[in-house]
Length: 279
Image (cartoon, rainbow, N blue to C red; front, side, top):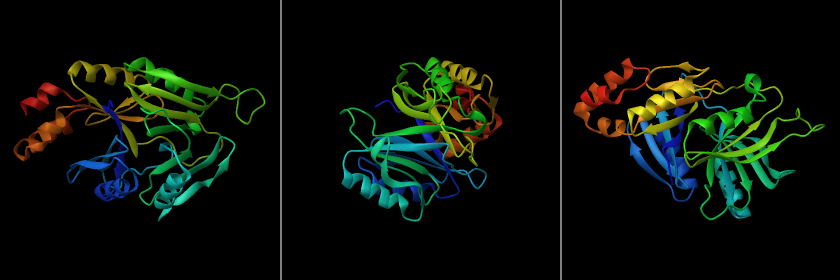
């Protein structure tokens, strides 16, 4: 599985606790990196990162993790575990689009969509899902087309729009599936009043092998958006991305080098591999 694009979850000091919790719920799960600032882990083979970023940002439902469950027993068990200490935006029940579905907020604030269904053998069981609301309402389809034009090995696999006379304006996106460099995502437009927008609470990490890749993604994703510090940016839809070199994690493993490397990172907006390597 190609895992060079993956979600980063922002926590206030509880990244390891959250990662441990998720790894007890899902199969094929493990913690791969554990530092005071960053915890990298996998659930159902999907790479995720927990960042101990402090109280500045909090996770909200604009980006959730969508999990397809194969059996009633599986969805019941996962729902029960995630609901402990959390809450249900949509309780586990039958809905027009699924025999069994739930949208739950866990005790760490992360939101999950659970649905009973079947997947092809090699399909990804856990995918990040975008909800376009408020100022971004109606832009989900445009976002899919924008992102798939930027990343290689990308495609739109499913695109279901509202028809005339349905509950949302014609052409808005009911549900879509797309891939960016082989990593699957889901997206939809959400009508109604919501008290959240895309923010840094859940961002997308893009690991790059070369400076050319960093330059490409930085340029394309900041068009109509905004640069931030330390490799962070916001695209024109308000979604946060981190564009980082793959070599960064190796540079940070050596305590003697890590402080110097981080000092250089803090000076930068777009990250520069030669400067970090020289540090």
